[in-house]
Length: 64
Image (cartoon, rainbow, N blue to C red; front, side):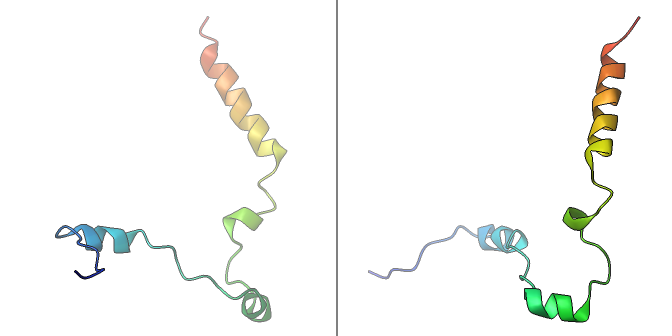
């Protein structure tokens, strides 16, 4: 009996679509410099944006 896993036809193709992206070496990334600022490092993503979302939510709840 082989230890190979039996995968239904087409399922292996779906799994490949969701494989994680190749991780970038941190030292290499810092040496080259980013071509654009990653979203998680975006300095604009602050409490101000969160407040706007909360205010929008409050506005939607008020229907006078």
